[in-house]
Length: 320
Image (cartoon, rainbow, N blue to C red; front, side, top):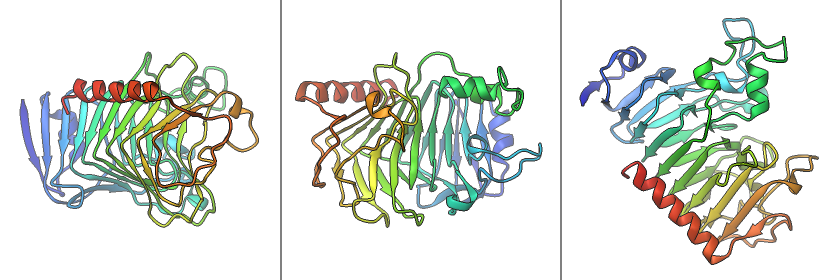
């Protein structure tokens, strides 16, 4: 196992691209203003604490890329992970652009690998903070340029776009902050003992999760034993989830909510019919005077226990 220590002035991208793996890279305290991609397997990237070590950048969707096209959502990340078995621990990843109304989406962390884990991290942005691949099938077709000549192969690199089969992502004791759809994608992902903080970007309505799972997926996003907190979001203004695509799946088990959570709990996504297909559920949700929409489900105790066991399995797989 290779171990390397870095300082804020070091070129993290060069180190990540050249280190002999498996490797642990220990970042000292400070601000790393760098946009990085972790493409090699078996890398653990550690900080000196999420209040001490910060990796930050400020790309945004409406910014013009060097290729003359806008970044759109998926090129705005501060950190992108494509290598398998990567673990992040003890630092903050920030997209410092705080004006999504005018600048568009601004991703902090994009995970484009099947296997990934994170502990004691802080992820901060506004709209679209955390993306968890794979992409919805229709976006794979679009961004690969298969049917639409307006897009070209390479707009989103293949290692960020294609990921056949399922993925399993696990987050423990993390703080994830954002406003609209700030946890989104198609992964089977577990969030255990995390703080999910809804900020205020000036809009009156916000959403924590925007899942886009396919019907064939049995598990989607699971929030277990999490605290859903307001970081300035108004009372009753935040929905737990809305379906980015049909069959998107999010469940909240034994979570504690604040008054910022809307009593309806879930939203169908504008004027779509995704209320017919979304797979949203909750169990043991406290702190909100809920009057949930009639198309979500309250899990049985046995069903909730199944999710708790699945979360424990993910924790065990990543040795956390």
